[in-house]
Amino acid sequence: MNRQKRKGTDWERELVNLLEQIPFSKAKRIASSGALGTLLEEPSLTGDVVLMLDNLPKKFRIECKAGYGNTSQITVKREWFDKIKLEAEMSYSIPLVALKLTGVRGKDVTKHIIAMDINTFVDLMTYLVNMKTELDKIYERANSVGYC
Image (tube, rainbow, N blue to C red; front, side, top):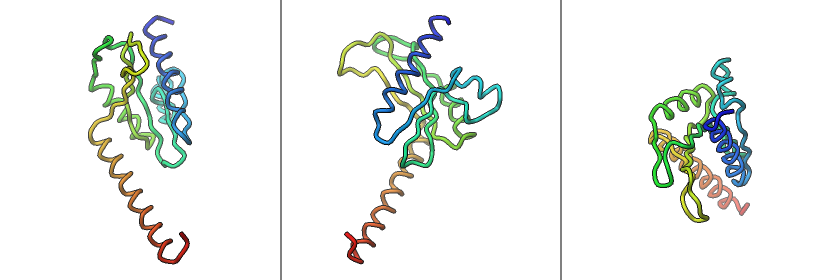
């Protein structure tokens, strides 16, 4: 395995470990960085990492990128967002891009970044606000009949 490929694979594994710190979550790395899913046209095998949260009906499909910069900056390409967005649409997932700044050392410095396009952000925030509104209505009904 070449050095660049190894760096990408290591980042995917590290991301899975970081994401599994979220309560009620399960993250998994997709073998061959999703290339097999693209070749076979199997949406469930696309992307680099998939994150599932127990209380969210959609999964997150994540494109991982490491080594496109240095300790203070990273190059971001629109094609990464376009690719993962298409893969996420085919699998009814939420698209994200996970970026890793290379060579960054230290405990409290930024070295990992999750990015999404603005439409994805708006859709996600709208979903969360609607979920909160529904939950408030349920609590309100429960309070009015004396359950809480």
